[in-house]
Length: 155
Picture: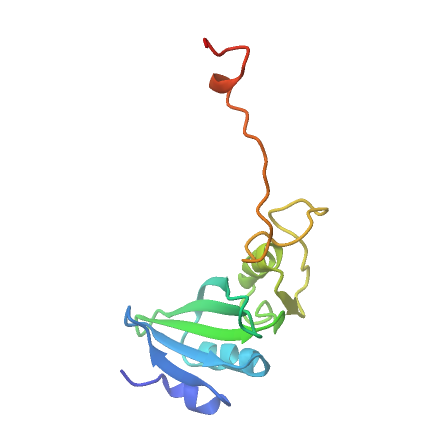
């Protein structure tokens, strides 16, 4: 499968095809915004998802992944950038990225420069750390099921 036309105009962009047949384009963080704009201009106008994967043994430990769709061509596109902690925000290009970037910040700690309101979205404001980091300590919180309470137990 050939790379989408816009890939050639993005510095350092590397095109591959995933095992699922989806075009994947990887760039350095400095080219992230340029890749997003080029993809949008290339017909990928539907923003679907943004998430991250944590690989703590790498210097750029977070792989941020955005999934786009080109309705006219009926093609999917996966955009990736590796970062140690920061990436430019996609909200100016796709307003729907707002909540996704807040989620990735909340759970992984990746900061999105230029985001209009980069605050926690799922966890309490005073929560320490980012629970989807692979080096985040596992907590121990007892679960209180009514069937296992001592007062109700028949034994």
